[in-house]
Length: 341
Ligand SMILES: *Cc1c(COP(=O)(O)O)cnc(C)c1O
Image (cartoon, rainbow, N blue to C red; front, side, top):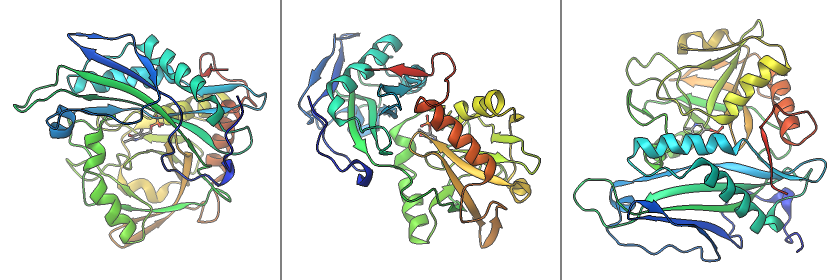
């Protein structure tokens, strides 16, 4: 056993095949015992429910090496719970929580040589997913499913410092009221692809989606939740039934309250009031927090006082505290760190 010969600090974010992946199949109403496989290819019917009707859900989390050399991941029980919610909404079988966490641990253990060393900034990204695999032509849920977990090493999110990004208010909607915005389903991403390509073409890093009903309230971006800091240093995050409940954002709210003694609030946020905020960040597993410097609303620029050069001071404190907890430099709340090795 030896670490793979990879230039960890210069890794990007693209798929690199690792040695093993976890595979479990659901058939005749039950999950099989599951195995580790070396085969990264999937063969199924051309009429599989996932291919015809997009019956697929996923999760994303990371394994990394802490300061004292342990390999850990962050709150995998919450990924299991969220995947359960996603499965129920798309009429898919639930992969039990304890088995989910065990399978994560086993998959990382089997790919331990791909876990980047402490200090490299790189991590081993973990992708659990599930899809309807048997042939379905009339519209109905599949009755056979596959649950898989693969891993792939990814580089540091911020190379050469966390530079604030510019986002635009999107004319496209992400998720309908009472729709599927709150679950991690591939379908939410399929319909965001045109919006993100269009945003990039026009020089923006991301889309800010509004509530489709009134188009006055802030929801989230394609893959990250918003966190705002008010001028009197309160932390605010938008509340809506169609926002995906980010584990990073929920953890940051705890950090803000319990570690930094800040007031936190989850409430509706109007596009109107953004101009009065001091800082803005995007929260998700990939970046933890990505600072936003500018929001463009149809030609009207909203410039956050934190500017375009660096993270705002409160965003930075939140980022440093949560990454400190994850890397084992700061004591974690009970149950947040799952030790793998
Ligand atoms: C995955 C995801 C997030 C971030 O969630 P984390 O659990 O923090 O990684 C935010 N928004 C959407 C739409 C997502 O799919």
